[in-house]
Image 1 (tube, rainbow, N blue to C red):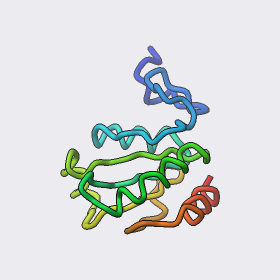
Image 2: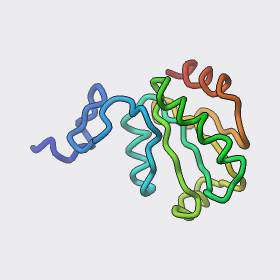
Image 3: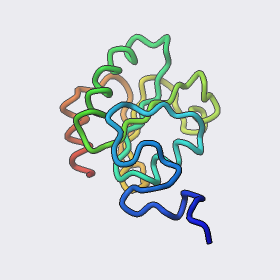
Image 4: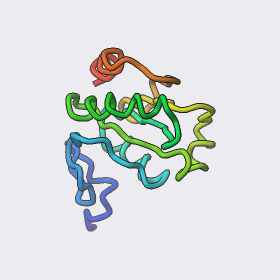
Length: 128
């Protein structure tokens, strides 16, 4: 009877467990597969950036996704493929950066490589 499990109490983006109610203005560092699943379930639009610290194109994309997190209603989630190898393998990540766009819990777009900010913003707004 308690609402403290945080999973069923998702109305209007409010959960007791969530530290980032609404849309965080900074990218969220994904800590586990279940953390990613929670982000996708709790938010209408989630842009997931699969990256690696050693990846040059990922570093080029980093300020773009940070601006997107700040300027759009979408949530930006960052997945370090070296830290979360099993998650990256399970999602079929073969190159980085790879971006997934989730809308209403469903994967709607998969992009590989550096993307233009305007294209990503348009994608988020079209799915918001």
